[in-house]
Image (tube, rainbow, N blue to C red; front, side, top):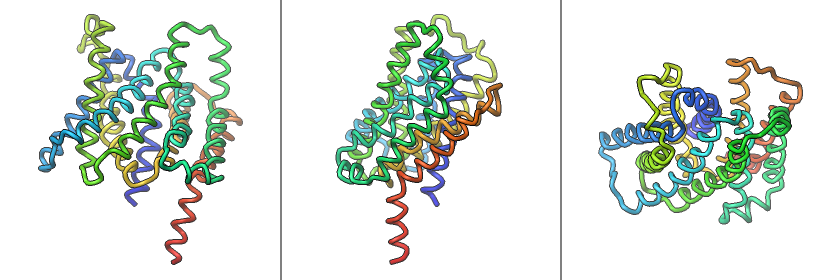
Length: 305
């Protein structure tokens, strides 16, 4: 039940973060947004660990957590935050979905298992096709319209971001001490990422024009949601899932998140869903089933035995 609950949190909550990041950017510059979000979330989580009496200071664990946090949250999520200033969240979601493929490509210890499973390979390919169906119209419109230099740079970075996220996730999965606290490691990952954003905000001179008093209520509520649900709840669930499940299984979040993103757009914006996008929704859900088919069969055999 804990595994199912963790998957549900990662699938649903992270899918909503694309929507709330854009709302938060209406009041916060991107680097200040990343700094505030991850330092506050990491600080709250670390305080909870201290109250529980967990071991917080372990040099080796901190180093591994910091590297993983910088790759996942600092680069992977940081790129998403920066590009959502001028690229629609739907287009961002489809490009980030490539992370699921990078998990399979970069997960060397699981190469034999992943590339041997036809259902896993088929699910990865079909899932990416489903995401293209879901956001294909937005992509065509974006590529046909005039592109600014920042948009072109943003799209290029969205190729790098999923690679950094998958690489950081796999590094943390295989290097982290199995007996170490998931909560403590998660807190250090967020703190390391938050600190990484500070030089960006200084070099881009965000603090010279930013005023806390001018941040609208919607932006405050959005960043509050990102801190509590997107970072503390969902990222903690994600780190724990990496510890107890295969990276390929966990990576299916990248295909389900866009489904949640488009449902939020339908509910809170003027966007309309098309028949092709409906097909895309079902294709994505089918791909998740294919990727996990081998795991389901193995679980069934265990129960029967």
